[in-house]
Amino acid sequence: MSFSPEGPSLDASRPLVAYAIDRRCGNAVTRNRLRRRLRALVDAHAEDLTPGAYLIRPDARATSLSYLELGHYLTQALAGAVDKASR
Image (tube, rainbow, N blue to C red; front, side):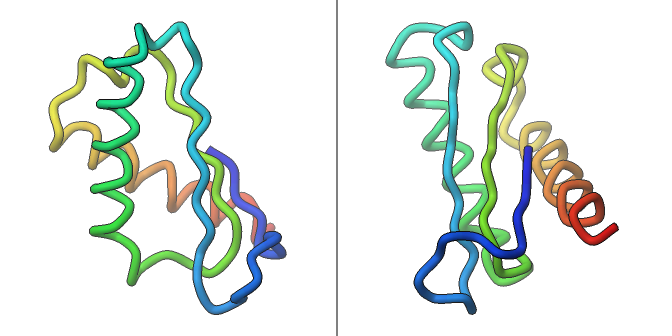
């Protein structure tokens, strides 16, 4: 997970989120399922996100997590990325 407060977004008041899911995460069906799950979780947290650019890059272990576990780890990663960028 990485975060840049000066993201390339045209609208600086909204976060820009990109997903980089490697082939090591599985076949196309598995990667797309993971991307859809991550999008749903990010949409649920959209109001809490700091404006900027986010790059979400899960590893292969993310495919075996439940929706709640994935949400927990994503929340931690989002907070950690913003904290790291603000230092």
